[in-house]
Each structure stands twice: as C-alpha cells, then as structure tokens.
Image (tube, rainbow, N blue to C red; front, side, top):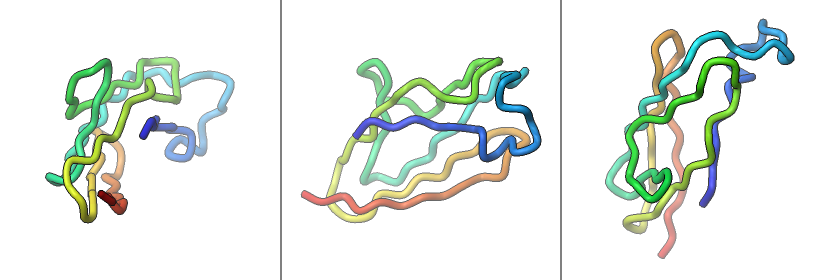
Length: 88
C-alpha cells in the first residue's frame, strides 16, 4: 500500500504557503507484521526535506497476518502510534 506523511496538521500555526524551514527525519518503528519500503529498500527513517510538508511516497508491506502497528517519532514532535489490520 502506498503512503505518505503530511506535516501540516502538526504545524497548524505555520502558514501553508511558506514551506517549513527545517528538515524533519521521522523514525518508523513497526512491529513484526509490517515493514516500510522506499525505492525497493526496507527503511526505518523517512526524511521530509526543508521547505516541504509532505514526505516522498513509500510503501507499507505486510509480512504476517494480524495487527500491524507502528510508532512514528521525530525530534520536537509528539510520537504517534497507529495500527492496521493485516489480512492474508
């Protein structure tokens, strides 16, 4: 499944037309049921370059049936955890 991260909700006070001035490196900590891929490689971080709100597209790959969970964190942001159902 293709996905992306959009920081605009986390940056509510920032004007959307100005861009963001810092590079944000997101750390992805999934459980064993899912993994993340970018350009054909498994990733554990994803970078949103300075001046942008949206990450590059990446892929979520199912590894085993059950519940896939991930905690996403970055300096100066509150960590977020999400779950999804992984079906065979």
